Length: 273
Image 1 (cartoon, rainbow, N blue to C red):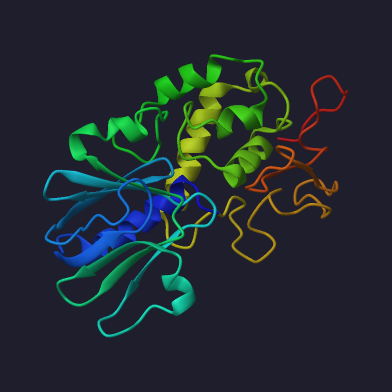
Image 2 (image 1 turned 180 degrees about the vertical axis):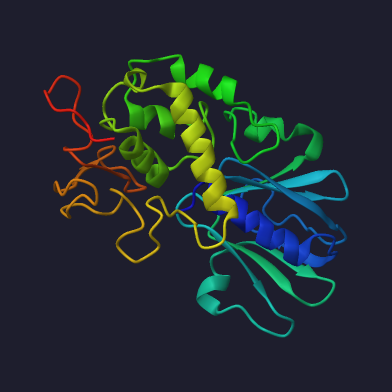
């Protein structure tokens, strides 16, 4: 799932492959700047904030993109053509000085902004554990502002803490032993923020640990609850439940939890931690 760790890993791949390269041909094919040529610029660097990717050029402009659920990036070797079906989904094309082409596919957000005004497009986001300016205390403050708000809704709100998507929110609820629809104030928010930051960093930077929450990389065993509806909880054996996060949600998000390990407050059971 494309969450903050996904975009961070994408950034590293693009940076390794294309940082410093000159764009000899290319254009934007979506958004307000559709048709705008990118020729003559060099890729200075990449940055991320939450699920947002920032491609900075040497002329003082930044390409802001967001994958959401369907977007992706690919690079074709010199002389290799992108399949027609993929070309039809291209929203960004960059032909580099060595003949390679960089393609942004099916990107729902494509914006060209002055680098000095990046805050116009990402300034609303909360602190991001994968950034150098990570501020854990500020994340705690924002998450604590509405202690009665449901756990899942609060953590999915990118203005509180950036980079957590549906998979991580569900897994963090399990790891904290809290029902996903219980008030976020029912858990220790300082401990939650520390855990979230540690999980995202491991997933983003440790080889083989991308979105592995149990420590077991085997198929079907890498997550505690996410994607495991109807299966036995790996900790207590109770059947994992699932519910739509939002009715008719176009992103088809789901909320998974174990009733044994994550009881609703006041139901008489104690979570196994």
